[in-house]
Picture 1 (cartoon, rainbow, N blue to C red):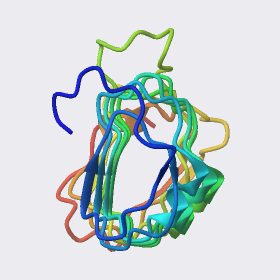
Picture 2 (spheres, rainbow, N blue to C red):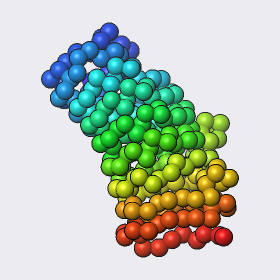
Picture 3 (cartoon, rainbow, N blue to C red):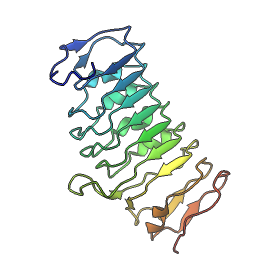
Length: 220
């Protein structure tokens, strides 16, 4: 439906079980499972929310919502998309939270949420044991009115497959809490320089991180 610039509505419900790819500017309630649908591309649209029925899309492996500047949240039902491997949320300026059930996305491998308003990662993230890429980077182009520059890091212990962690441009907050961080047995090849901002850090465990060649400068 490319270049349908004046399209404002698309059916009152969607029920196309043989559909394999869907790219729209608005998403209504979903009927049926559409098991063959593997990609849902909604980037650069004006949508504010996803219907709770999105959890019916069990076969989705890619959900692209990049630059949806009006998007304010994700429904808890997203956690039912157990085959989801790639979730792209970068540039969603008003997206402030993840659903607490995010950790139920057992197959998630890549999560891109840079340039959002997210300040906290849910504790359930430690269950994402297949996650390989986590990007929460900030750029100077982001207006602080929309996107905070402080990130409360979760405990990354449990993310055994993590290879890339990008927190560039973030100010790691919660320093009174994070005196101890366990990053052991991960597969990433570098640590973010911003880890040096955790001035209360007294314990950092990076044992068995066999692919980590060096550490950023840390002030003790």
